[in-house]
Image (cartoon, rainbow, N blue to C red; front, side):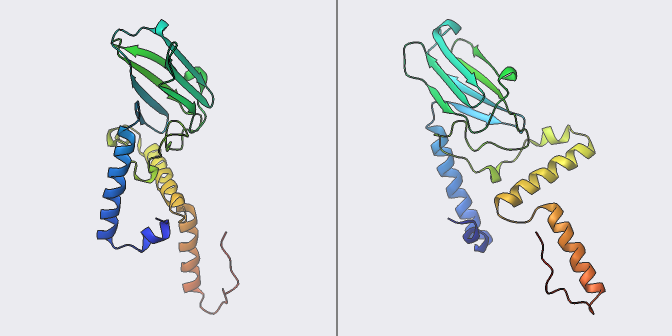
Length: 191
């Protein structure tokens, strides 16, 4: 469904549509051979492996734009082009309780949400991401305001709507027009 169609929906239709999309997304994500979560700074991937698995039993490759996790001599459990670039030197992996591989990927661009870990996987709707409030609450007022502004601008951009700076300019321009009705503003353009 196109964004314009979504914007034309009633609140009730949007709620139904959002629930259907969330259910579809959850089903797709549940079928992946791994679980993942993210913050604006990083992505953490948890991959189940047979109990007793040790580091020497694995092949793990973390490159700027590529990931591979496999048991030696077997097809990869996770392999492909990463959604976005990572900081290889700050990304790590470890085995938890000899039954899960935990991969920590540090994002190069720490201002965007990832739609998926690898480009071949189903995408999630990043416009619906709600960051953990406790994380925002931990920030000082100025930083929190900046992060909230960035999140608002990212949602607006994803929906094809103006960001906060453009909205501010438009409001200032509308106010100016009201104060100066004698002027002709028909040729004014906003970029």
